[in-house]
Length: 595
Image (cartoon, rainbow, N blue to C red):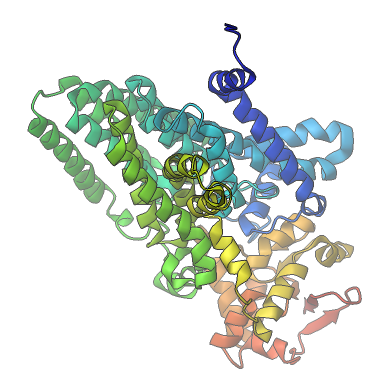
C-alpha cells in the first residue's frame, strides 16, 4: 500500500503549518485588489473624511520640520493654531512611505501612493489576529474562511480602504490582537498581547477605551474563576502599565501633558498604570479562595473608580469637555455618534446583522465545546462580542469593531452548518443549501436583500447635498484658489481641513472639539447678521469667504437661522463689504473678498 500523502493532505498540512505566511499572502492579494479598484481615488487624493485630511497635514508638518511633540495645526485658526489631540503613532508609516517614494516620483505622487497604501498596512495585523483566534477556537483550517468573512464586513473594511489614513484601522488591528490574546492558551503570552494591544490603541486615541476596559474585565474574570490564570493577568498588568508609559512618553504631544480627558494624558496614564499595578499585586497574592479573588478584584475596581472621581472630577462628564452650546449645536449632529437604531434601516441592517450572527455563533460554540481551554476561550470571545454588540446601541460608530469581533462566532456557526449541507444526500441541499447557508452565516444576505428591494427615491434636497459633497472638496474645485496669494479663508467647519490640504491657504476652523471657540465662531458668523459675520471674520484675520452651496453643514445654517447671514448668501443677497471673485466656469464653489 502506498503511504505517500495525497495532494489534499499535503494542502491541508500547508494550510495548518504555514497559516501566518499564507494569511499575509491573502492580505497582499486583497491589498492589491483594493489599490487597483480605488486607483481613481488615490490619483485624485480623495481623502473623503476631515480626519484623513488632517492626518496628511500632520504628516506634512512633521516632514517640514515641525516638532515631534508639537501636533498643533498652525494653518487652522492662525497664528495660534488648532490643538489636535492625536499622537504621532499613525503618522510614522505614512511619513515613511512618503520618504521612500519621494526620491523616485516627487512629493505629490509620493503622498498619493502613501495615502493609498498606508491604510492597508494594519489590515495585515488584523487578519493575522483573526487567523490565530480561529485556529485556536474553531479549527486549524478555519482561518481562510475567517478572511473571507472579514472582507465581507463592510463597516470594518471601510476603515482599511485606500485614502482612509486616519487611526481607526490601527485601532481595529489592536482589537484583533487583543482578541487573539484573550483566547491564547499560553497565559503569559496572551496576557502580554492583550495589555500591549490595549496600551498601543490608547496611545493612538481613546476611541477603543471601552473595549480595552472590557478586555481587562474579561481577563480579571478569568482569574477570578481559575486561580491558574494569575500569570495571565500579571503579564497583562505589566504590559498595560509599561505600554501606556512608553506610549505617553514617546508619543504624547505637548498639549496632551495637560489634565485633559480625551486622550492618553496624565489622567488616563494614571488610570492605566494604577490598574496594571493592582492587577500585578493581585496576581502575586493570588488567594486560593474564589470569593477572595472576587473580593480583591472588586476592591481594585472600586479603588480605581474612587481615585478617578476624586482626582479627576472634570472627566466624569463628556471626555470632550465641550460647552453645552457646542454639544447641542455640533456634537449632537454627528450621525455616527447616535445609536444604530436611530439610523435608517437600510443603513443599520448591513451593520447590525453580522454582530447578531456572531453572538449566536459564539454562544453555540461555547455551549458545544467540551475542551476546557477552548470553552474558556470561547466564553471570553462571547463576552467580548456581546459587549461590542451592546456598544452599537450606544453609538453606530461601534459597527466596525462589532463586525470584526463577530467573525469568530460567525465562522464557528459556518463550521457547523456548511459541512452538514455539503454532506447532505440531496443535491439541492448540497448546492443551493450550501450557498444559502454561506450567505446567511456571513451576513452577506443583507446586502442582497437591499439590492433586491426597490430603491428609495431621494428627495431633491438629499440629491443636492450629495452632489455638493461629491464636487466641492475635489482638487479640480479647490485648486483654482491657489491663483490667489495665501491668506486666511472663512469657510465651513467641515471644509476647513480639506481646504488647507489642497490649497496653500489657511482656514478658521475644523471639526475638532478642543477648539470649540473657533467652531462656535463659524456657526455664529453664518447664523447671525452680516455685521456680526464681518466682526468675527476680522477677529480671525480672514480676508476671503468661501462657501459650497448645499453642503450638509450649510443646510443646518439655513434651517436653524432663516434670514441669517448664510441664508442671505444662499438667496444671492451678499452685503456690500463682500466682493465676488471669479472661479472657473461650472465651479460648485462661491468666493468673495472680505473688505
